[in-house]
Every structure is written in structure tokens, then in C-alpha cells.
Length: 291
Image (cartoon, rainbow, N blue to C red):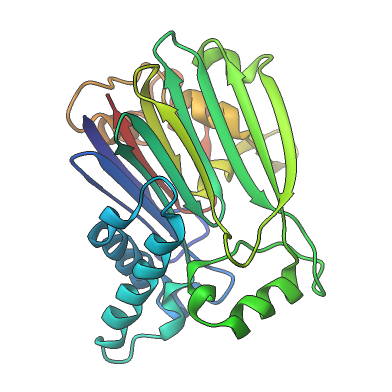
């Protein structure tokens, strides 16, 4: 296995509140909440603590063991944060996404929202995007964060305020370039439960050679549009962003994802984000495994 990751600050953020790390056969990404005040609640610290706690407790994650994993991560993170003077306890308001080798599969586990995907050995790409839908008394959307598991009161408060609905959109295409043309698309609306507010998927390594997880900043890219009379921005689709991000990706090289980041974000060459005038409004973190 070769693993790699990166995190990249969004244009709207004072600090990068996303974080990513990797090990021999796993990648972990976290997205610290900005709506709660961003840097004022130390969400950049929280994302890092959460990712390191997940790495420490990773042996708890496997088939049928998602909740024990998340509960142990929450306990570890809470204790670690409490040891840091003046660190806001709300800092761990963050999503958590993991992709790891589990036996002969790629295992993906998600607490919160974000995007994950795999490439089949025949070249077919499968993309999964989870997003929470408006509901509850606020009629607004918000992901279920791991820290809500700390008490029944916090769990009940979340479901009252935001409801329990999510949408999973799955895209499938024979080639990466076909994702932006006419991919197969399947949308499913479901509900999360207090005893299982996470998402997961498994893909046999025998049939798949690449897997990734990414925070929702992947869907935040914007394009500058300049006309004779105005300067505006337009949203760039998730699939178009993915096509650039993984274009001709050298999966079998050490540091493959960081090399791709440097090309996509920093070089003004044909097809890069810089050349196209695209930028991520929200922070972005991506972790991946190549088999």
C-alpha cells in the first residue's frame, strides 16, 4: 500500500480548519466546523486532535465495529483536549473520515459529510457524496459531529434542531474524464439514527486499486468570470474538480497526492486550477490509498 494526504486552506478562511494524515495502510481527514465561529472555537486544533485520536484508536475500526471506534476516539480526544489550557472544549466540532485496508477490502467510514471514492482495476470510477438535508426546527442543514455522542442531551438537541435526513449521491463512469460528461447517477435519501449516525462502504482490493476520502471543501470550488462590465464567480461542480484533482495521478509514487496538489494548485499549466482560475472557497483535505 502507498498512502498520501494533504490539506489546503480555503479562500474564505483565516486558518485552515481541515487536517489530514496517513499511515502504512490508512488515511484520515477531518473538517473543523466554521459555522460555530471557526478559529474562535479552535476548530483547527480540534481537527488535529480528532485525527490523531482516530489514528491511535484505529484498531477498533473494522467490520461491525464502527460505533466502538467512534466512541473510543471521542473519549481519547476529550481527555487530550482537556489537558491543554484554555482550549475551547467545542474545538472537536469536526467531521471524521477514514479509509483503511481492512482484511482484503478498502473500508471507508464517515462521521459527518464529505466525499469518498474508488477506482476499479478496469478504470471505472465510483464516487460517493454524503450531504445532510435541511430539517428540524431550524429548517437548516448541519452534519452530525462526533462530539454530539458525548451525551444523550446533545444527541437529542441535534435531531431536534436539524432533523435526521441525508442524501447520498453515487456517480459511476468508465473513465475519470467521463465523470463530467454523462456518468451514471443514483441519489438516495435516508435517515441517520442516534445509535448509528455514521456512513460506511467496503470495496474489495482484488477489484479496486485506489480509494480516497475528502472533506466537503472538494465541492466548494469557484471559477472567476470576468466580462467587460463585471467580475463574478460561478460554482464549479464536484465532478469537474475531481477530474482535475486526480488527472493522470501517479498512484504508485510516494507522495503522489502532494505532487498532484502542487501541480493542480500551484502551476499555471493547461488544465490546472490556477490556469482555469478555480479556487476552493472552503478548506479541503484529501487522504488516499493506492494498492
